[in-house]
Amino acid sequence: MINFTRYTKLYFLFLAIVISFGMFTLFSKGFNLSIDFTGGSMTEYSFDKDTSTDAIQKVFDKNKIEVSSIATQNSKRAIIRSTAMSETQELAVRKDLGATQLRFDSVGPVLGLETIRKTFYASIVAIFGILLYISFTFKKLSYGVAAVAALLHDLLVLFGIYAVLAKYGAEVDTLFITAVLTTMSFSVHDTIVMFDKIREYKKTSGLGIDVLANKALTETIVRSVNNSLTIILMLVPLTFFGGDAVKFFAAALLIG
Image (tube, rainbow, N blue to C red; front, side, top):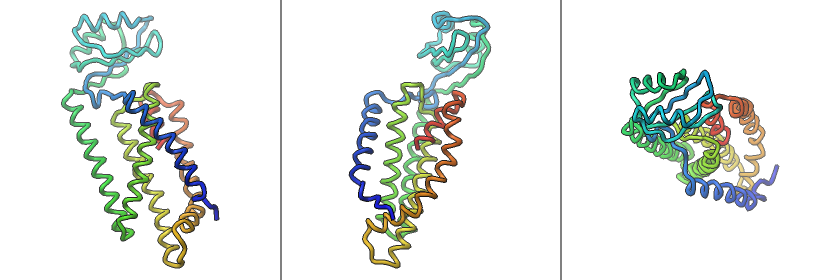
């Protein structure tokens, strides 16, 4: 049996550093919110010839559309975020640019606020559902509270590291919310296995919680690592070689 609890202080120190750095980044820099939350349009164009950001800006100004950012992957491809455009306005811009449309997403500001509201409600319902389910299953509220505490720890790590990734273009969109909810389910999945083992040993022995936790961890860690590796081996290629639409979603799942 491995004495995991012997290194509890070291675990807490490491996690305090990671979470503190992440939270500092989050509160000082914030997330990059996608148009799913802020409202607006995101268009991606490819060009037959080299096109500068100034030229793109002039076309949008001509069509009286306010641009918030222009990101050029190279001189023949650009992603533009702007105020919400209609399909007619987008067509006019595309003709003026002489470009090929690769992507066009448009969300009104009201719908963006509704998305934020629904995301918040979904998270609260999920957390309370987990609290009630585990408390009922293990016949103790303390089990539910511990599971939610572990879940919140995982979310803090995910939010903090994702805030750092915002420097490299990571945005909070509906895919990120999917990754958050998936992380919550995986967190509770492993927690339930651990709790079940502890409850099983507790019935047949009078050992203290430290010994029970060490014994349960020792017997389940190989299973947990193997399960995680099957997911990690899929997510790593998606994170580094996936397209713009999925790489940060895969990164969020990988962190979680």
